[in-house]
Length: 377
Image (cartoon, rainbow, N blue to C red; front, side, top):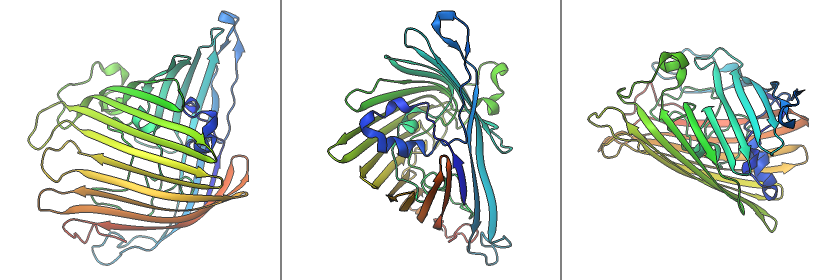
């Protein structure tokens, strides 16, 4: 497995100097091939005019696996090996005025043909007052979350980018970040970081992303779409500090949406989550937990996800192990769907922005009705 990147984080203000180990962990999920800032002088306000530079990342993986492949099982008739890639091209720019206020832009283009060809796309303004962004981006509750480290760089088992087996139950893969709105258009505010603490607040009018809702020129979105959440408020908070020889990072997230159309069995959706990461020299430990009522009003219909992991850095090598679990209750007396993931891996940093990574992942997929076409290992 191969991954190329150069680290860049437009939200680096959320981690103070004492939490550099935590910052490095966060940046590993927003990796880039190259970053250039080309600024042309305009003389206006003593600042430079914004010109977009290029960034991004490219991850390429080769996987070999074994899964249940009997008649009617998920792996029936499928190959046991695959080559995949996951990449983005980022268009980035920023400038700082004489008064110290920074304006910036970030547009992220998927490197493959996707239904959502443009991923995040937003502008922001930042200064001593904090930071305000507007556009398509993850909510504060997600952006500010800490979680388990990834044993296989760029893959992981908690919110993984890549999986090689079919996970067809109601859980899919475990995910411990609070995010009802996803990349839907929103406004987000982050406070300055004070004594290690920072807060973030996101407001999303409608959870339907612009492409699926007709786009910018389609007029106002419907406020009566069945099963859709709107007027979403998502709050994130984290604490990052070095105390003695220990880097400490803690986070919490909360989100609530309003159901647009009343329907039997449905209600306003609520999520909440907790996360942590501790660094002791070369050793890093992280864990995360999330509860999601899934916007359903019936009893025993919640979803719960959690995971934990540890990595150990030794020169250019990093070794790790992690576990993740997700369960979605199917209703009173109906049991639950469950997904368990286990992973060990290693990453070798060959040079700036270039890394080799590999390891072993084991998935256990259970269905509440023991459906042969879904259960898989």
